[in-house]
Length: 312
Ligand SMILES: [Zn+2]
Image (cartoon, rainbow, N blue to C red):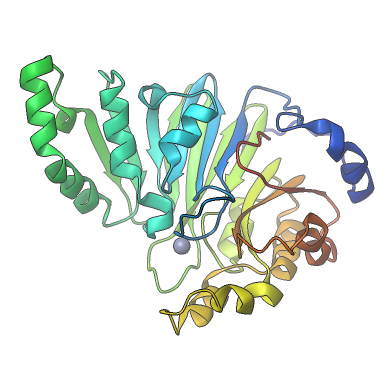
């Protein structure tokens, strides 16, 4: 893995001391590689208030890499200062709807915004079928705009890079991206991604329960952006979902509790752990201190409770 610039260690006390003044862009990076949390909600629900559905933006060497495309990703990107057509690479961790519902529309929005170069979409099966289906869904509009507005054919600009094994994903501009398979049953394909540049390393867990493969991928990383579930509050979440009787079992088997997450971060020896994909996402009785409490039992590094549009 690339060499890592050691960052100043921030313990829990200094995190709390600094938090009020750091602001959304306060976590200074040793180079320009950074991650912006576009949506920190876990799950596909769309509600009036609260965090957006899952998506992230990694910026390295001036290029934008979108990781996951939950509903609202285009709007969140714009709010983060990036227009859709500036995105050339999209990576999907897994194909639960909260991670890909707006994948096709983001590609379309890139085209509507002036895309003329190819856009690469990486992810596990059935990515090929999903993109083909979306392009069929939107074909009527594409054909009309090609003829009427002289636009290039979007179908020729989308390069689908479906993969189904861990390993290197791609290298570009000093950036190396790699993936490992994580444990998110009942899906057979769920991946975490690691971004390495000469000055910084950022890992995004996607959705996973405690996963030794993820720990191996994240070894020594500067930043680990990881999903999290507050188990004690899950039953309150379930009381608001009347039509999914086996959801609790799925949540427990496929996600990482706060206590497990402390083990993950400690065993991976990451410097900064960023909590995201909060489950439950809408329970305002869960304070930042409560999200951190059980993580802190096992992990001594910096812990950041993620917020939409926070950059780390
Ligand atoms: Zn999932």
